[in-house]
Length: 192
Length: 192
DNA sequence: GTCTATAGTGGGATAGAC
DNA sequence: GTCTATCCCACTATAGAC
Image (cartoon, rainbow over all chains, first blue to last red):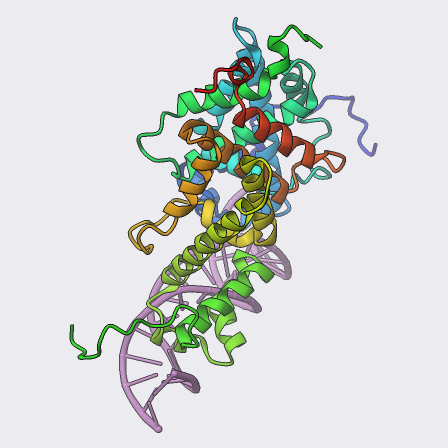
């Protein structure tokens, strides 16, 4: 509006200072956990002092929102990749969900452990993900929702170390997803 | 060992200072959330100063362990009560799980969001609960585990405000628990 | 069993100079 | 865009007097 420059958007994977900060923050979060993610730590890693960060971001919460948004986009990519291969789409997406969460445990928790600040988030940033999940459950939103809860429970309990060491989690995943995805009625030929 | 007193255990629901501290801590945790649970806050509520607490408990972690242990015992009682009534035991226990969690959201998170410090916990404090759940799933540990994950996921997503406002959660609960509890095979008469 | 005083640590954030 | 200096906050925990 104020600037005469044509619609040249900032590059997504930019080398801008702000993007750099978010990238470093993600690294620290995954390496040290949420308590390690301090403004001081981020600044140190960048080779600057903490107060300088505030020239690029308003406050810590803005940083966390950026991390969550990135995480949601990554998850969508992982889902799309998983659906590209053969096999039961529900199971494929569940496996992708599981894998992604284990690979980014702290970001996963940041993304799912509290209300999504939708008003601060870029619009529609998780719509595509939801779409993919629902579709892989035959368009049944109810079953997709139940499967989401099951998957989220499996992930958080595993991350919290709450399963006994001898539990066969792969089996539990298969049992849970299969039970939710395939209603008994289907077996009798009642394919909707 | 050192004291000659006979085996008179401290009363469970005692009026001892330590019990009082734990009770107040539970109140504050539920009222203010985990960040509000500070030694200062507990002391203030008791009308004393924070350092005085350390005459009764070793450190804050000991306090949290006591809270978790109490929570586990409460949950067991809730499960037992739920199984006393008619109906599908799996559904009954799931409803009890849901109700208890919503009534004690922050304690629930403290109990389930991190590894259980079993070595600091009174022995066998959750064995009875596990027993009840497994039994209500026909003795099938695998299904009981999957149902646990589903229930935990439902609770944490609801507590985190992650379900859309128009979601019919009662329906999702019924669908999830029924799907997991009753395998398709059963319909063909394969009742083990 | 309670107090005061205090240590020790750490956090987020701002002002103003350069 | 970075710096220094600093504020203000909060927390857990200990020492030692009463």
